Length: 312
Ligand code: SF4
Image 1 (cartoon, helix red, strand yellow):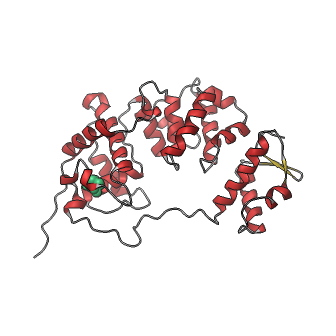
Image 2 (spheres, helix red, strand yellow):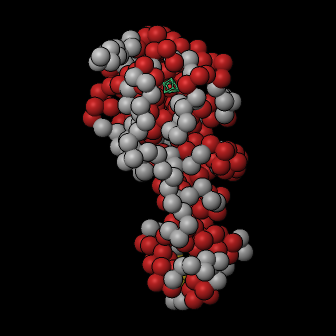
Image 3 (tube, protein in one colour):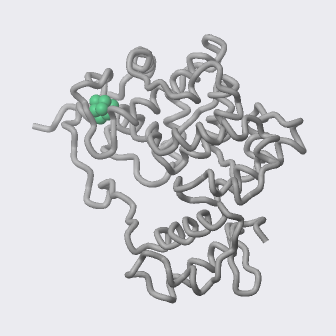
């Protein structure tokens, strides 16, 4: 007998249940508090792009303590910016964050701009970050879709086990189709929906092991109603490799340069590359990674010496 067709749920009860759950179970994160400045929200969104909350928290606190406004960050020495970024990974984000702060000073009177179009024009700001800052800092009812939201949406409304690597046109249509009416509650409902769906994806509807037994929309979820089909081999979430990668070698070089920057010293190139605590990394890989950091503007060379930007 063919399996009965599974109906896609109405979006309104899904909003209600997930928002109600959010009000009870949301994490108390400093960038979500009412007294957090738009700059604090902006910094959090840049840091959280590729780094988990637990690692972002201490760096965010330090960043906001040192540079409580865009003007403070814009004027800071770049070596200090990269040092405070520490091991958050993908350090080009730190450079872009400072460049965005400088653009806020020169083009927006030292304020974080309020519309997603203005935000999108800042260095390093893409569609997601622009929408998230407009929504979470200025309560603009923008559709905010990160990986967590995509996963919740496809499971609840389409029954797919995973959302895949890219934000597809079909997912974009779905996100807009099920988005709450932006007029309701002056856009407040839409903004709360964004953060609530994101939180559900982070805490309950996770990539590898969704906790459906404690999910507020279990009875409405199309994936569950379809018998919770397993993802195909290709769709299975995989952790990003780290050991032996160029990212690991770049990280080790940056760590050595940060250490030297604490005493405002450059380091000898040969000594720097030889001393990396990575026995598996070949000389060719070490050199390649250093050249890529120089090309990215994350390090500078003078003769045989290397340093973080601004040390020479
Ligand atoms: S029931 Fe399970 S799969 Fe569906 S939204 Fe909740 S946690 Fe995700």
